[in-house]
Amino acid sequence: MDSRNPSTAADTARMQAWLAAMPDNTSVADFVPGPSIERLDLTFDIAALRDSVHRALGVSDYQGEGFHALPLTRRPGETTASANDLSGRFYLRPGDTYEEVAREEIVDESAFSEFVPEFADTYFEHVHRELTARFPIGRMRVLMKEPFTCNSWHRDPEPRLHIPIHTNPGSLFIVNHHCTHLPADGSVYFTDTRGYHTALNGGDAPRVRLSRSLAWRRASGRHASQRRMTMPFRLSDDQIVAYNADGFLIVRKLFDDEETGLLRRTMEEDPAIAEHSLIRPDQEGFGTKSAL
Image (cartoon, rainbow, N blue to C red; front, side):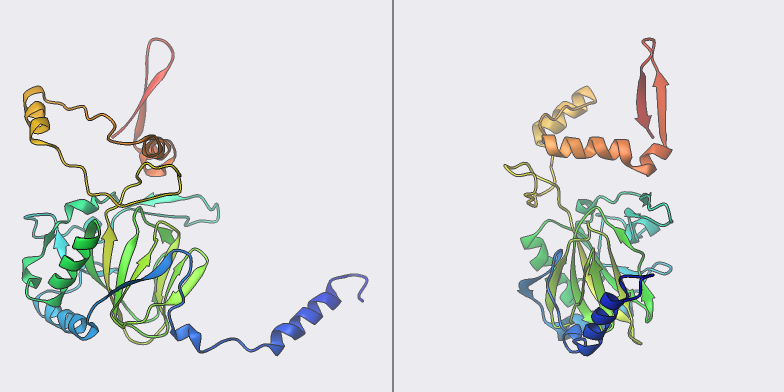
């Protein structure tokens, strides 16, 4: 044993064991479920999905620079999508300080309730109906990733459903510490993109995927870890009348204690909010903090 480095013998033995075992080079082309990446029982016709991509691109084209998206849903009546609509709020740690920062603006997923009429005759409309019947659905987009490209390492405010349409074994999805390929066989995959994640295309052909945001919110329950999906809150006719008469409306118990705590922490810790916050001192030496 090398007295200058007692770990030399142990490292040598471990290296020999590692080299003796060959890596599994077969299953990397399969789907391997894991934390935050699961496959639903629901499936769609992959041939019809590919035909819909071909037909949709004959009507419109991908939008965005470096982030290629073809929106299939929109806010009712809106005919153009902003750059923020194509992407939306995300969080990342871009520097060597490891501090998290927020980028872009929050998107109200539940507002994207109208299917774009230009794609009404495609199989995408069927997919939209089926998913909307099961889940609170937000933006629906066809996403294209060029060969040998990778997204940033980031997290989103909401989870996603993904349906791969054109892919290759080098196209991978990573959430936190789990990495897997998502085969294009008509399957629907749940990816909890509230965790840090990225998608990469290591193949030499474009990867095309149908992406649906889940318009979820945390609900109250016996356990803080429990979550369910709820439909967006809507005002009753009486509440609308009261608002029009008084100019304001108080809705009690709209958020539970856990949700209120999350809002409070976001107001206190979100760097994007802190950048636009003002503190107005009062006569008692305290201050009122407001964000614009």
